[in-house]
Image (cartoon, rainbow, N blue to C red; front, top):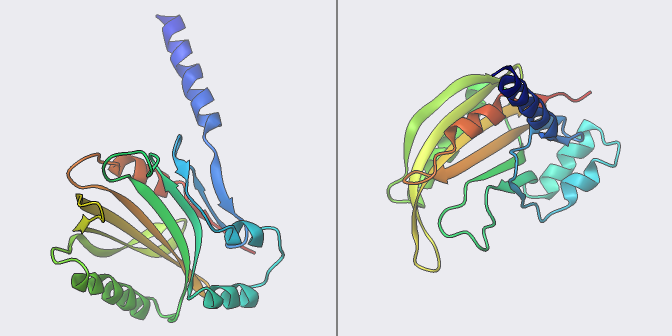
Length: 201
């Protein structure tokens, strides 16, 4: 029995050490990577920026030049090319922040989210926008659902968890999506959110 417990503990230790962290030094963002998920970034911009010493003014200029948004992480639980059905995914963008006042900023985010009513007939909030703390920062969280139709005729009921973290002159928008009628990744997503660290000199 003691040997079984020791083996279990050692397995947990090895697993924890094997879990890698995604880190973007340019924007000061890091988060534990979901184990076994597939990296989906096609744009190397974020990785190239990490090699440079860039001040806040230049960072903001780069974000503006990329239509107000820079993708820093995109991962999929399965290969989208081979998996049948909706693939759980995580996407993190850095976006331009146009309002320093948190209340006004939150109103802008909610207004933007509600604009999806025009794209999806059944779009609605599962959880209304609320304030939460992520890595010591006052942030915004809400959950939506909608039906998505693909080009090949498939229909998916999508659940999307949105985390918005304002930081200096920009903000991080984290989209975590899964299948409302299928695989529920809620526990995995919540665990990852708790590992987020934001710190930039």
